[in-house]
Image (cartoon, rainbow over all chains, first blue to last red; front, side, top):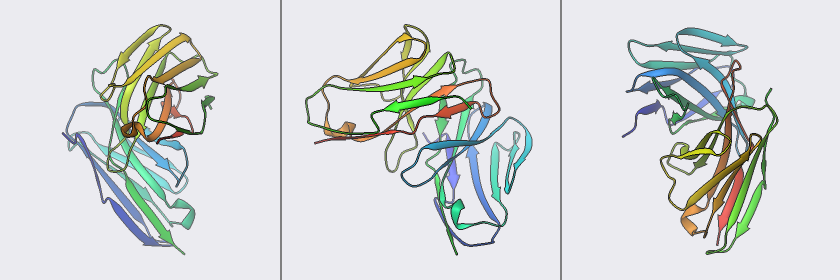
Length: 111
Length: 112
């Protein structure tokens, strides 16, 4: 089924590196969400996108609707960025707002 | 930010016993969702609600029921818990804000 695919599944980086996490989807969407989950923690919404690009601090999210692809970038990565990053999409025409989730990318940033 | 709390945070229960998890919101949002999170799977929708007494099934609803008698509370019940229902359960609400969705802190349920 896998309507939302993320890559890579696991990512290890050194502190300070530029990081990219990718999300591809196969359905028509109303919006795409990037979420963050720290080990043992809750889920925090980072971005909601329907077009273009958004930036918040060191995090940048982009989306290409034609290619059905989104990327999450982290600049100047830090150990506190270690978490699972989850991509989720809301279906176009899905009036109840249910999200379809990717399986997540586990990021580990080493000092 | 919207206020959403889940209770309990952790629970261990025996196979065959009923269990109820509670999700409480303080923002008067219409839509509420229950998801479960398991290794190797993305979050999967169990049930959702689009208003008081209005609920519908999600992808993995077998063995679960829900109730919403007040806007602020959405209850998830496992009528007779099984080991396959050992999971982390998240409640979410959909609002009109910048991020669209707010998630609770999760309930870790273990069925022994």
